[in-house]
Length: 272
Image (cartoon, rainbow, N blue to C red; front, side):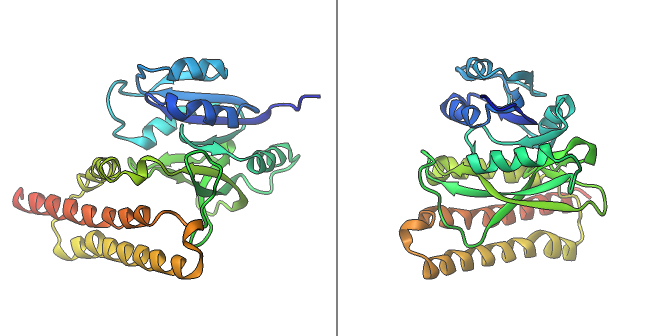
């Protein structure tokens, strides 16, 4: 006998995402509601979404790159009808273990938590191999709509919670494939686009604020990533960790953001 649908909304942002969307949607087809917010796709994205019964809505500025990811995620949350909500990217998949954990939570007669951090793992593009990380990594992606959670941050969007909200932990994971991230030209283009948005929001002309809140965090980030790059390869076999070039590419982001922030700071300084 077929199980009842999982009483949770899955939300996905798409734009010409046909390459990975079918695999993504197949991994979440047991959920009661799937919402696809599309940015004006001209490939087979929308046909695939309709195959899986997704509710399709339009992004704020179709035909143009997303400038505010929190805004687009919030649109999917605002039209969701299930009590629970989980968001995933169009090239990612949900594992069977995670689906069962979510099913258990949504079937609880009482709520131990209204918000959960969920583990994610990096994998090969075919999802057949999961890479070992320096430590388990989690994101807050699964929550009850009664929690009042909402999206913030234009780039690297995340969930904002009420003060004092307790957060549960789910160790079952969703999988994030490494493909474009291993091609430096593609990776660098995405980094430049994303980080330029962050840097453009800088407004302070105070030099010590610039150093303390702008540059110092990038130095710390670079140092931590370099340490993890070395430590994981001393601890694990090379063939079970992410390809070395991926970790090297990640060192590029704090360098680029430092450059963008410095450029923006100088412009703000001379516009006084």
